[in-house]
Every structure is written in structure tokens, then in C-alpha cells.
Length: 455
Image: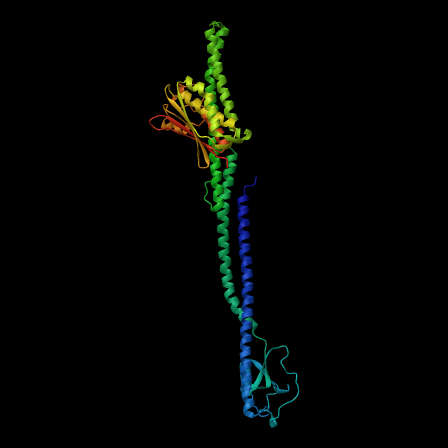
């Protein structure tokens, strides 16, 4: 069986995080280089425009000083162009070439005559910028600066000089962060997988016990809680089996001993002896019936027949059904039942739960005590209270009253199997409600059922 899934996941997460970081770095590097080139190009073009304007202004001044292009001294304009690494071309208003890199101009040629024609020396294939030459409000010609190929690598070299160290640092940081995050995510998963395998193998003490961020931490915590619940359920199952065996052993032993005495002729089958054996069989049947009732209550959610029910009417019916048992126990019954409290519930199951509470009161209260049943609406809940003035529940036993087969310290003198209140809890929980028990130190007990009111 493979057990390196956590390591494989860690490697995949590390590779995925690192790939994302490298991709982002590549995109940013490309954007930086493109931005650098475009920025340098824009700055270069702006500088060329200014140089061309200066050369045009110098040519205009020369034209004005000479009274025309024939005697114009273009050395200043040529110097401005040469300072920018460009060749200077000057044309007159008709487009004739006055000066070019090959033909310096009228002030430097013998005879001082301008060269005519439309010679081709215009720096074809080079970056050129043209500006008009204006003087006295009119255009008398134009200058064109032909720039050589720029040193394109210079700006890119500067950019690379910054990008390469930054990229190396970014890759190192991304690798470290990817390793940490992948380890942080997969380590709890690995421990969770190990604990799950151990739990499946029968180790009920196995827990993940790992701290993790966010939803992953919630998953680990939920698993540990589930393991705790499974452990408690297993212990409860074993305790229930032991308790059931204990409860069944006494009547079975008495019934078996009595039958053996009759079989062997040690006693006569007189009515008293047969009645004792019959009582043992009834006790055995009652325990089996209570267990069947608990099983049905635990699966009540699957067999509910919910309807709109006036809980007050159900409470009155439950009191009426248990009236004879309460009277026989010498108890006084009081009611404070409000009408019109409607819930969505199975009336038979709620009747059964209330009947169990009343039977519990009849079993544990003393003659002369009283039982009070109250029903009221409280906010979004219907509240049912069954309170008595009996001996109460010891503080140490209040947390166990709804457990299966729990009979408490008074169980030795009271008949019963300790299942009735467990049935109440299951039936109420099946309806989405809660049941609690309280008992002041002075005596008496109050059982409170809360069920959601129909909206």
C-alpha cells in the first residue's frame, strides 16, 4: 500500500507554486524590458525633436543674416546636428537641397553657390526628423536630421543589470515560500492520513493532533472530534452490552433456579411459587420491551409522521393517559397548559415522551408529592415542563439521567430499567428539540422540553 501520497502532494504543490512564481517573473521581466525600450525610444525621439528645432532655428538665423540661402553660414546648424550624431539636410522653399553631409553648404563651397537638384543623400533607412525653417512669419525651407542607428543595447544592458539580480532574489524567495507553504499544507494532511489508517486498523486513540491554517485546521479538528465520538460510541456500546447483560442476568437466574427446583422436585408448583416465576418473566419481558422501545426511539427520525400539532392538546392527553398511574402513586397533578402553541411534530411520539416523563415522576416521587405540567410559547420555541416535588436528583447524577440504563443511587428501591429518559431524549432530538433536567438542592426535579414552533 502506498503511503507517500503526502510527499507526492508536497512536491506537486511546491512545483505548482514555483511554476506560478516563475511565470509571473517571466511576464514581469518581459514587461520591464518592453517598457524600458519604449521609454528609451520615447525619450530619444523627444530629444531628436528638440535637436531638430534648434537646428531649424540656427538655419533660420543664418538665412536672415545672409538675406537668403546663397550666403547662409550653416556651420552652427551642422554643429548642432553633429552633436546629436545626425547628418544635416537643408532644403529651400522649392525643395532644392541647400546642404547635406556630402554637400556642406554655400558658405563652404568655392563660389558660394548652392548645389541644386534633389540628390538622394537623405539618410534612407535611418531615423529622420524634419522641421520647417521660418523667418519673418514665412517658411523659407526645412531642415532634416538623419540620425544613425541608436545604441539599442545600452538601455537594455542597464535594464538587465537590474533585472537579473532582482529575478534571482525573487526566484529564491518564491522557492522558499513555496517550500514553506507546501510543507505547511501537506504536513497536517500526512498526519491526518496516518491517524485515519491507525483508526481504521483499530487504534481508537489515534488522533491527528496537528495545527493547520483555515479550513485545513477545521478538517483536522473535525477528524479528531469524530475520533473522540467514535471512541465514546464504542465505549457506550460496550457499556450498554454489559448493562443489558447485567439487567437480564438477575431475572433469568431467578427464573432458571425456580424452574430447576420444580423440575427436580425440590418444591411444589403451588400458586405462590408459580406467581414468583411469573413475576420474573414479566420483569424479563419489561426489560426486553424497554430495549425495543429505545431502539425504536433511536430510529424515530426515520419513522416520524409530522403534522401541525397543538402541543397543549397532546400534553392534556398524556396527563389523562397517566392519571391512573399518578393517582395510584399518591401524587397531585397540576397543569398550566396554554392553547394555540402549534408545532410540526409526530403527536404519538411527543405523547410517548411526555408519558415517559410522567411515569418517571410516578416511579420516583413519594406519596403526597405533586407533579405540574406546563406548556407555553417562548419566542420561536414551544416549552414543555414536567416538574415534581419529589426527592430530586443528586448533583453528581444530573449529567447522567438521560443515559441508557442509568438508574442512579435510588435505582435499587425503584423498579425500572433506566431506559425511559433515554427514550425521551431520542424522541425529542428526532424532532430537532432539546430536553434538559434540573434539580435544586432543596429537592424536586424539572424536565424541560424545547421544540421549534411552526413558522
